Image (tube, rainbow, N blue to C red; front, top):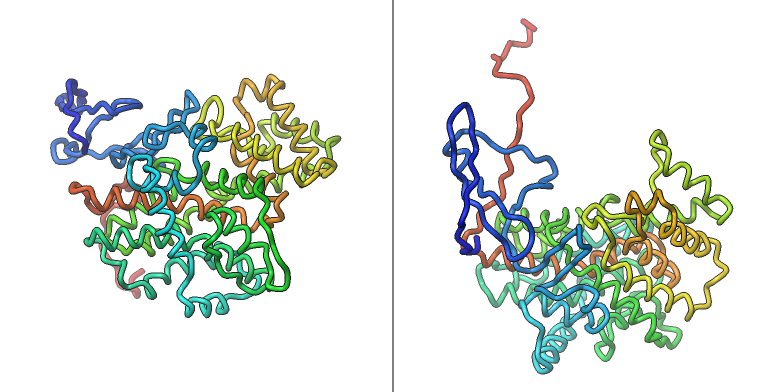
Amino acid sequence: MQDNATTKTARLTIDGTDYELPMYSPTAGPDVVDIRKLYAQAQVFTYDPGFTSTAATDSSITFIDGDKGELLHRGYPIDQLAEKSHYLEVCYLLLYGALPTAEELEDFELRVTSHTMLHEQMMYLFRGFRRDAHPMAIMVGVVGAMSAFYHDSTDITDPWQREVASVRLVAKMPTIAAMAYKYSIGQPFVYPRNNLDYASNFLQMCFSVPAEDYEVNPILSRAMDRIFTLHADHEQNASTSTVRLASSSGANPFACIAAGIACLWGPAHGGANQAALEMLREIGTVDRIPEYIARAKDKNDPFRLMGFGHRVYKNFDPRAKVMKQSADEVLDLLGIHDNPTLQVAKELEKIATHDEYFIEKKLYPNVDFYSGIILDAMGFPTSMFTPIFAVARTVGWISQWKEMIEDPAMKIGRPRQLYCGASRRDYVDVENR
């Protein structure tokens, strides 16, 4: 816990007895009531399903103000980083707490680039999967197996090994994701090229083939870099909390990141951009939009508009504006204007900014709405949307992992429960039941 000593306390009365609970004031955001000693003093737990009102840790990495539509990485607004920076510079910022000098950035990029290849024996892991295996299933397995190949970076008590593991994961995740994609479509693996930047290298590993030359378009590379940047970290979300909980047991970094990938795979988390695109395809044509708008407004209809609104952001998603700009650039470059799915997306986007229902419910297009359109236009199948999300989020998971491991107050996670099962009862022999 940061030493921001309290100037006020909260008073809790239970059965006529008062308990004084210290409060902490963060750099930004609401004050926090410290309940760590509540059970010892009052023999009660707090109840918070989903942990939506509970601060499980203190962190200095990312801050979100959902009411303002603000996302800050180490204090820097995400829109500024997406416009002026690039992914590996944001990685450095998240990992080390400050923007790098030119020399520091060059050194970091060199270290990442030198770790892009996989151990050659790991190729056999891919061949153990069925060809129709989902790329996320492959990524969970391969990333978890990294601990069997890189023994020199699994000791979490060694700062240097933590550093090596961090760089390796950032460097190798695009290679793993690209190989999972290539395997799923029956094409040969493409090795990384260290003369390319991070995003361009990922695109060439996904779309080049040995039989032909391939040149990455800078507009597509910039769009991919922005997708990585805008998804780099998002505070204590489900997958990040999973990584933290796994790491609290002392598990090696590769196992912890594999746990994060598994959590991200859930459609309520990392699959949002895939769900948004599938919804656009389900609508099919512009003339069917009123039907689906009516369904979305009908409280008795389970249909939901995917890619609109956000659980955290209550006014707008600060990442969406930058992503919309990239979407426009990519679609203009590729000349995709008469695509029915795109026409539906454009019309829905227009409705969301003018329809009173959308405005009142704050159902604005979010980052997933635009990223799905971009990835589809680039030629990625929907099965690759979440793996790309995993590539981007890896640095956020690692930054949170490092912060937790280096915290002297770290302890193993152990949520409590509100038990609602049977009370104590005695065992009855089977012949007497």
